[in-house]
Length: 423
Image 1 (cartoon, rainbow, N blue to C red):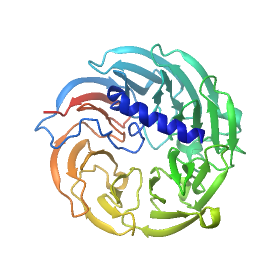
Image 2 (cartoon, helix red, strand yellow):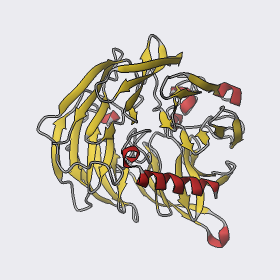
Image 3 (cartoon, one colour):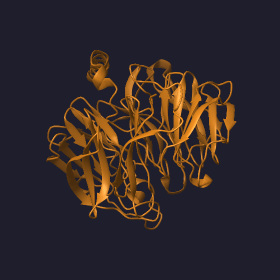
Image 4 (cartoon, rainbow, N blue to C red):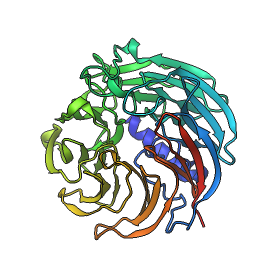
């Protein structure tokens, strides 16, 4: 009940405060599903050339920029430490920088942080690659508290042997902040999911023995029960928000637990999948009050790899295998259409970020190309295409016609760019 009240209150506050509602304070936007709020500035076309408002050199990393109250929060490798940097959204000038933990290095990407920070209520919550969570003051960058997951029985290994999930390639699933609580996927005995008090970082409860993959927890209501949908190494599960108890689970196993794509919820259906399992529709029912989960369909063509899909109406839009833009009917799992016109430098690592803007979808491909297309199950209808930046694997932030993008996935780093897309 407390969780429900907090969500309703958050929604009410969003309606009463338009300036706050159009911020992009966490991974994939205010509701962490890639959907622009109704009072945001939706695009119906793209300019012939994007206007570069500002552009600055960025240190290495894969964390996405987020924007709140006129400030861009950027997580990068600076001097060998995973560092949060606060910048003016207007001109890119630096306000403060706070180094947190030594950078993580492996063979899969740049040397730097891989998890997008969350900004909420004057606090910033960055999670470092090796499994440490920090709480910073948003105005000054001062550390208010921090916790090492090793103290919660998590043993970080790195790129060794066949250890799966986040303990191998770093923690990437953004923390979930709701009201007074911060929820994180840690891994360890009784710490698969951990609830922390945001005022001091103290553990409120911990539950489950599962290992985290790379996707963040997603809040949802299924069969009337408030829960988190989590994509663990062991599979997809519904977790009770009150105490972390497992409500349901569908096993899903892949090599090295490479579960990246965030689950999506539509009605009582959970859409989830990975590069070896196909995209799956999981039906959640509660006959006689007992929750049951059953795979209703699988779609191999639409299997996600490192991209997160979006939903418009009853259809899923995302990147399937090997590098196709796909539209899938969530009720049946059937592909409505697929298109191969988006540009990806490496088809095996094709990635695109999506932002739903009313009846249209804006995509940013790993080749740095922006494409605006109609969200229609009748077929792919392109509305505009421009080059925005270089090679990237990051979600952009979008605020009032301005797109904040980060490029550069090689060792020399890249750029943080603010583009004006509004005509």
